[in-house]
Length: 256
Ligand code: ZN
Ligand code: FE
Image 1 (cartoon, helix red, strand yellow):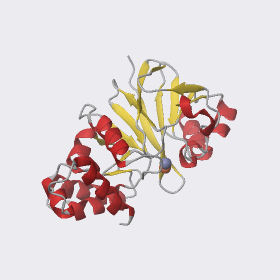
Image 2: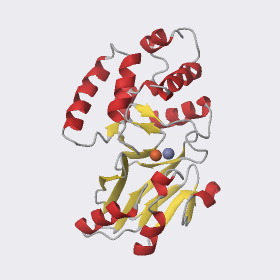
Image 3: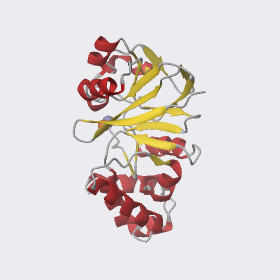
Image 4: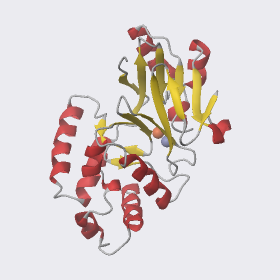
């Protein structure tokens, strides 16, 4: 069985599309192409032929390249079937529990609503990779445009329950700002301090901070850490339920 190669393709200001490919089986996907240009250039530089477009959610900075890429390559588009009209060029509608076959590789579909009502993640168990779109970011989470704090908490929990060595490929390079916010809530978290050192070093060289791992996110992402005594103390919510702690964390990040 051949390995899956995953490479970020920077798009727009701070988006990542991802090339996901395996030359042996001929599978070549792109996750969340914001725009066609950088993806076409990356394909050409690697002499790859695009076969699939995988969308996590319908926002334009994740689907903006669908139609041009489809027209130029004939790639099939996968996204949320129950939200068909919001995914340009959608061919294959996916739902929770679907196991999609891409060449020699399987992707499991997870429904992770709240940023949008039909947000999906694509989990490749053998490659130990998950594409989380704008639901889980490195040390962050997406805004709640179409869902409640309880929905986002459930979606993040679904992701954080994946094996801890799973690599997390998120939709944006927001890591440094997310980490600065995390430190305001949990300044004594040693794992967070250490990670921020690494993140600042990478960003000062202009390098991506993705992927992270589920283990790292569990240790440092404040949106997964509503049980943390330090976060609860900072927020003055020692006795609150996890969803209330999460909701207050999200609210503070909105105005950070
Ligand atoms: Zn979005
Ligand atoms: Fe986005």
